[in-house]
Each structure stands twice: as C-alpha cells, then as structure tokens.
Image (cartoon, rainbow, N blue to C red):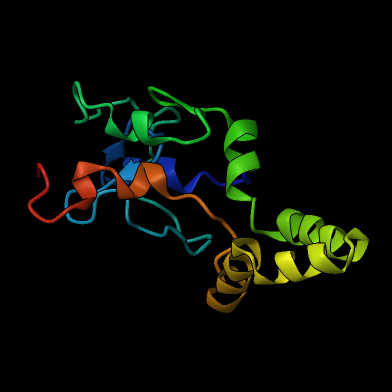
Length: 151
C-alpha cells in the first residue's frame, strides 16, 4: 500500500483536488471515486512543486467516511494501514489461502458448507473483476462522490 510515488500527493499538487479526511484525493467532479496513475518522464518542468503540499480540505465538519470505516482504520487525515489492510485483503490472496485451508481441512459437511458459502462468491467476484481489495466504504460513503456533490 506504499510506493515510491504518492499519486494522491501528486494529484493534490497538480490541482486535481484536495485531501479528504479519509486520506484520499477528492476531486470536484468525481469525489474520491478516481483511480490515479501517471507517466514518468524526464521532461523538464517549468515550475517545481513544493515538497510538502498543504492540507486544504473541504470536508469541514463532515465525518461520514470516518464513521463508515468498518475496520476503524481512519482518523482525520490519517489511515492505520494495518487495520485497513486486514480488511481490504479479506478476499484477496490472504483470504483465498485461508479459504483453501478451510476447505482442505474440513470434513465433508464443512467442505460443502464452504463451497456454498458467501466467501467463495466474494473470492470469485474479486478474481473475475480484477478487484483485489474488498472494502470501499470510505469512498462510497463520501458525499463528494454522489450526484449533486458539495462542489
């Protein structure tokens, strides 16, 4: 969940939006419902971006994203990555490994129950859609991502 380039910081520095209390880039048009990426180049820039981008959030008193976090991983502008990761990877490789172990070690009735249970459906959905993360509560609850957002 960490890389050499912080695309959120780059997005704020580029003027695409602001930091939300959930730590995500919030844009005026799409709220937190954006996927960030970039292209690395050695093209010279005319102007250098400040090393530290100021927090100029427009979330004001809103705490909907913080309150909606099922892992309790959010505080204003801070993410507990361990708590978040434990939740978001529930149906990723970690969850798949746990599911396989459960199926292999279970008796016949337990195997049937596991194969018909919700965990297999969630794993299948994630594998089919390429979604390796499971929780989007802080993104989907944010008013900035809804039609008629505060922008």
